[in-house]
Structure formats: C-alpha cells, structure tokens
Image (cartoon, rainbow, N blue to C red):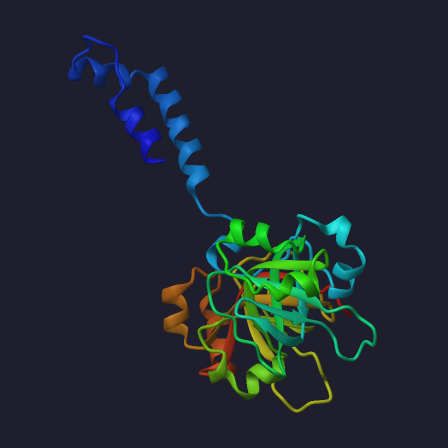
Length: 283
C-alpha cells in the first residue's frame, strides 16, 4: 500500500519541475484518472469482512454432523459450527460434538486464532474456520503451531476445523441471568426471534417455558430481514444498556422515541450489539 502510493507520489518524467508536475497532475483528465486509481487502492485496503474485525460469522453455516459426513465436499471451505466441547486434546486443540447423539463423530478443532480459547463445560462454542484433513506437518508449517505428535496417530486424515475465531455461544437465558460473565465479549447466541421492536431492534427467546428475560438485540444493519419466530444466530458484543455509551461507540440508526422506549425497559440490562445475524443451521 505504502509502496504503491510512494511510487504514485514520486514518479515523474525527467526534466519536469515541481510546478510543471503540479500543473500536469491537476489537469482535469489526469486528476480524474489519478483519483479513480486512489479510490481503487484505498477501497481495497478497507476492512469490510466481519471476520477480519474479530467477529465470528458464517459463510457456510453447518452442523458438526455435516462436517463429519461431507468432509470431502467441505475441504477448503470456511464453515461455522456450534456445539459442546467434548474434550481438550492438546495445547491448541480440542474436540466438539453432541454427546446426546450416539455414534456421532467428534470433530477436531485446531485453534489458529492467535487467542487462547475458553473451553466451558456447560456452554456451547461457536467455531469459524476452514475444513481440512489432519496432516500435522502441513498445519505446523502453515500456521506456525507446535502440535502434539500423538494427534497424527489418532486423527490423521480425519476432518479438522482450523479455527480462525472461537466464541462462547450461550443461550439467551444464560446471558440475561448472568450478564457480567459475558460483558464486553464477542458471543454467539442462537435462539428464536421473539419480538421485533423496530427495524434495528428485536428480542431473542429460545425457551418460552423459562422465566428468564428475553435478550435485547440492537442490529447495526437492517440486512438481512428477519421474521417473528425465525431461528437465528446473532454474533456481537454484549454491553450494558446505557444510551450514552452505545451512542458513543456505535453508529445506530435510531431516533429519540426508540431510545426512550428501550431505555425505559432495558436500562442497565444486557444488550447484544449485533455484528452478524443469520439463519441457524439447527432447528
């Protein structure tokens, strides 16, 4: 990026003075071409991919069963799965799978996110990464990891997800019951859309039989459209609902009426500031 701009700024024809260069540069045709070129470069340098700003997302939202059964079709693809931690395998690896489904193959996850992963006993994880078959030497070389030799014997040629992001995936009731455990963390919540309040706000409730409060979501974009009763996954950062703090940190398209309506009901309660909303792979 710097080299491209430096060349653009310093390259000129021999014998052309600075004044002549400025005059030539700001000729209407030259200026238009140059500005178009700059816009192309700067546009390429901007960060538009949510995965690059630390939030998990789903280019391909699948189940662990699909990864196990359709490994060859998914090799090289970025997928997002949600499931319980089965066991820790090594310093950078663990398996995930549903204990309630007898005979389901557990999927090995290699943590290549650069961040340590919390492995809870009773809360699901959401893992986003590329599907591969385990070849220890290749993974160590590509991701600069030091993997345990025994992985080769037990998991060689079995499906593995090379995780680029790992997030806690609690249920809405778990969040509203103990929000301090999740404040200022990226989490991924799967649940049913309970109530659409406005184009940018709705609540989640995965279990109508519990007495826990619905989880408020503020969606930073109105795309994609969601419907009442739809099963979705919302990824984002959990915050206490404090209008001044939210307005300072996020550019939300909300008016004073909506602010006051939400503040009256949710002041100091947890709110999930959504980075991504997409349809769940699991009913």
